[in-house]
Length: 135
Image 1 (cartoon, one colour):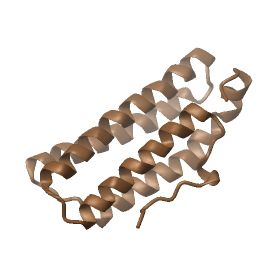
Image 2: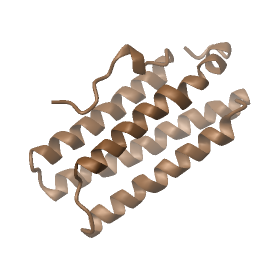
Image 3: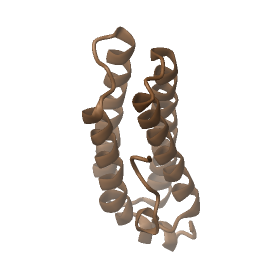
Image 4: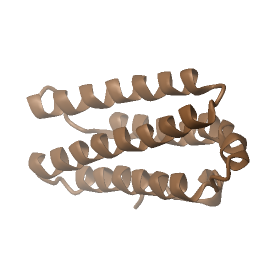
């Protein structure tokens, strides 16, 4: 069973960003499945590493558009990205060091952060993107 189900509610109606958000949802769901299935530390570690790297590149894409379009909330939005990346990298490091295991609390944090970020912060830039012909 998926932890996050993609729906039109999560869509921001910017295809490139929606595609990347769907991939992030898939990655979180893969991590959740691997955790529930008792997959090896190596497999879970690889999923975490790929998820962190993909998230960084996704955030960079959004931030490049923010700069290009002079988006007025870019600094606030980038700060959210930076805080999440810091937490995700700590999670990754702690996991590889063996000081934490991926559990329901971690999965709930990932789910809530992504859904809240899309539904609140990302929806704020939609008008700016559409005005600049990014749909």
